[in-house]
Length: 240
Image (cartoon, rainbow, N blue to C red; front, side, top):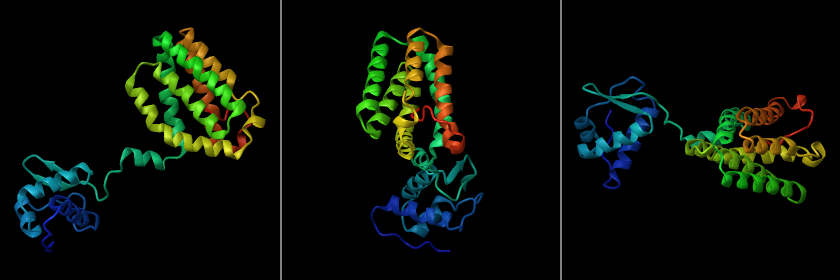
């Protein structure tokens, strides 16, 4: 099957697109060894260096993999999905399951590692959350709630944990806004989960890792139960 020559520019992008179409269209199934660079270059009407770069593009998309001394093989017929795109498609319940793993550990570490600066940030975030519940709309309250959890994660003093949390924030925020829109937050929980959030700050202040982890786990578990089984939710902290 002849692939046909390409127009002059931009050659790498065009070559990658043509090769990708052959793979996603089923012409080269998974496990197939691609023709050599010389053959592909001749059929596409480009140089071998262009083919080589195009194959790197396909490898980056997770479609092909080079095997030393054996050639380049098709390993998937659909491009690997970008992590952020995958998160955008995730349900808020799925995000909460991972959030529990991250935040429980972060709370434990925060209780061990927090500094005076961290405590000041946590106190300010708790006060801002109270103010947003009293005077703000749903969006302001959700943002303030997330900001408090962000301050707790940052107090763990682990930049990887902090970065992971930030990756979840857009999906988390969207899901929480939808959730609080389903119910009257103030009527459902007049205390708006303050005791639990104040308890988290207190446990971090007291250097109580077990207590901090328990508070976060219980708070997130309640919200997750509501997300997964709306009929079983009996009120309480829906704001995470």
